[in-house]
Picture 1 (tube, rainbow, N blue to C red):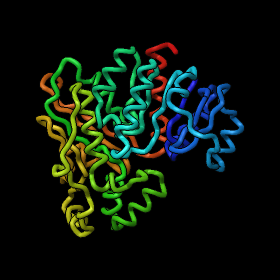
Picture 2 (cartoon, rainbow, N blue to C red; picture 1 turned 135 degrees about the horizontal axis):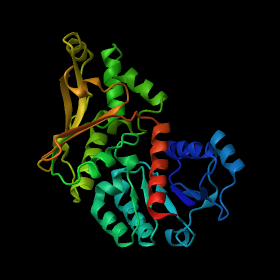
Picture 3 (spheres, rainbow, N blue to C red; picture 1 turned 30 degrees about the vertical axis):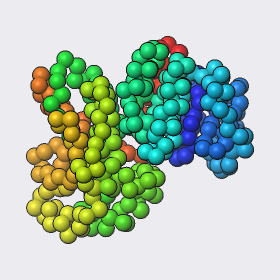
Picture 4 (cartoon, rainbow, N blue to C red; picture 1 turned 180 degrees about the vertical axis):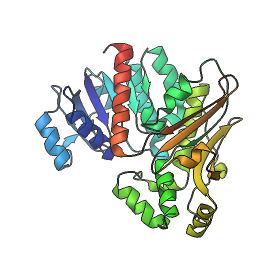
Length: 323
């Protein structure tokens, strides 16, 4: 299978590490960052990739145009650039060109999907290709499977989720008496926190994931308003410790109901399943008219888990298409 990877940050390197541990790794035709690329139509050499992962060096080949790249025999495109809403329109345009050539796309970048998921989905359907969305919907938490297949034949009335593992990890550390700044530093050291950690603690990563999940389930573009998003920066250690003494916990929860996405800290008692979501784990609860409530818990956050979820998308698309 011939692969192009756009974006060469932590996620891409984690995916390469994951593939290097497999008996049969995909053939990587091109690695691309914002300014340069590495390309070999025979597939980048395994020894070279191993050396690169041990000591990443700047790429030296100039970027080729999208038109030139898309002349290659590409079986799958991995969009692993950072989530940056400022670049969403440009990347959305590039991905549209990829899909128009009949090439499936696996995403870790949420921005182009938030910009306009439906146009990408319609183009993919028209070209009979698939979108891999695990990396933008909770990674190792199989929220796509629950939201798509798990709700078939029923109407989704509402959803709520602990969709950002970093914030959950930080809140648990604060229960232990660690301040937010120290907990964030630990999360970064463990590879749990996003590079743009403000998205995590301010609730925007949670809002984006819930918006995308709603878009996928309802098959229409769903966004959010900043006024409905509240993060965890203002939560004091004293408040969290006080709630702990009462047998309660605070979780950063994103919700969707009546076409509105909200994110805010919520207080839970032990009888609620969300109380028991630990560390960097995540959770999703979907309420339907015919299938009652369904809840998923797990899907620890981390680079290894993100890489495995991206590979899961590859296997899923390969199974569907026989590539």
